[in-house]
Amino acid sequence: MNHAAHKGGIAATRRDFLAAGFGAALAASSVEWTAALAAERNMTDDAPLHYRTLVDVASEIRAGKLSPVELTKAMLARIDALEPRLHAYYTVSPERALAAADKAQREIAAGRYLGPLHGVPIAVKDLCFTAGVRTTGGSAVRRDFVPTFDATVVRRLEAAGAVLLGKLATTEGAMAGYNPEFEVPRNPWGEELWPGVSSGGSGVGVGGGLCFAALGTDTGGSIRYPSGMNGIVGLKPTWGRVSRYGVLDLAPSL
Image (cartoon, rainbow, N blue to C red; front, side, top):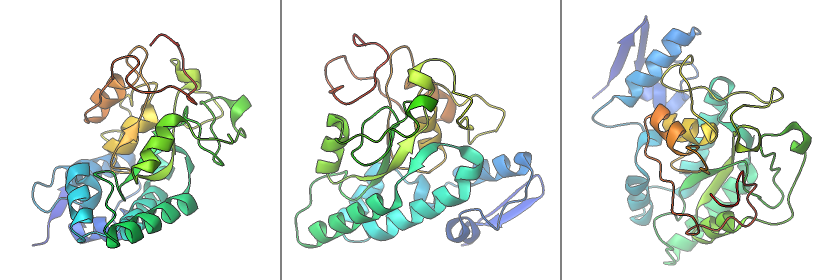
């Protein structure tokens, strides 16, 4: 069955959304664009792949119904199509992501399934060190800083087989405002709506279907605000439960 979304002058089929990543399906105005995002997200049957839950995607990967490589390519294509409007990412790492997806696919085919993150494309807030990939902390003075090692959280995610798509936007130093040298993330529910801070890129990335999960940090609401604003679920873990090694933190006690 073909599903069409009609609002603000838009008519786009589900096939258009999936195949073109919105590229040819959307008109230029922001009102029409956000209306189309909302219409796509509200499909109740046969939801687009990028809005499937992580649990659903992981189940299909494990069953061999979904290829980590093809899934990663689809997510990278969607990022290419929507990043000019959403600004969720500071850095996209396609080569690293595709290499991880290929490794995951070979491991799973050989019967070495690591668990529910294996082969699933995710992303991390740009406060987490990633070896060979810049980590800005949302600050212009760090825009070319490239760590030589991974934060513990990044290392553990990759050890679980997750596919790291890139680094997500953050306010400068995880404080209230974005550095003027960086683009501000836009809420996929409406360009004039607040995306939340400081893990704004994490909220927009998941809310906009640009990754299946995202890592954020939270001192005074920086996971909870973006989650609430972008219509997703966020968790601030108890202090000490998750390592902060290799993470540019705002407050060591939170």
